[in-house]
Image 1 (cartoon, one colour):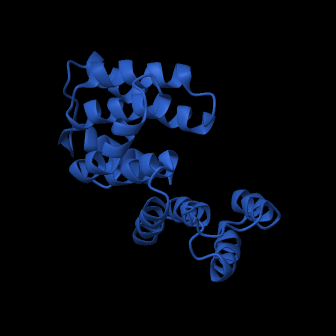
Image 2: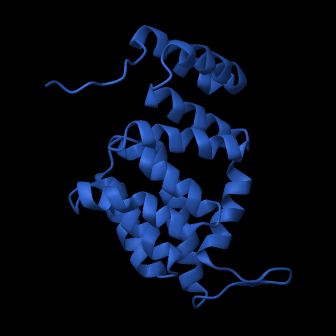
Length: 191
């Protein structure tokens, strides 16, 4: 008996969608939807759609599309990582940890995605020094997804700022900031 994998769209179909995604996200989403008619189980299309939705602040659609990508391809580790990161930045650290569990089980301890997951686990538990260490180690090993290094570096800088201020920051309007609150604030600014 052979394994059955769902049909994926061709690279010729995917390449122009990726090119469009960087310039015209709404048009790219329309192109993805058109491709999904013929390839409804192409996890790459769902993941890209979810990523574009995040950038457009359409968070319900983003969560649905990323979750669909992970359901279709449970071993698509970058999609699983990003879904968990989305959940963490949405104020759902326990959901993020559950989403990331298969990454911890599947990847070796020195893999950059697993190191990022470990760092974000520490962040969710307000262990900032451990977060910084894991994320820095992950950045040093990640040569595949350089934009993600930039995101992790922003988290490192914020953790270091918190550590420098004795572990607690205050603003007149906000009071104490937790790891989740500063992630939520950074997502609002970035996307």
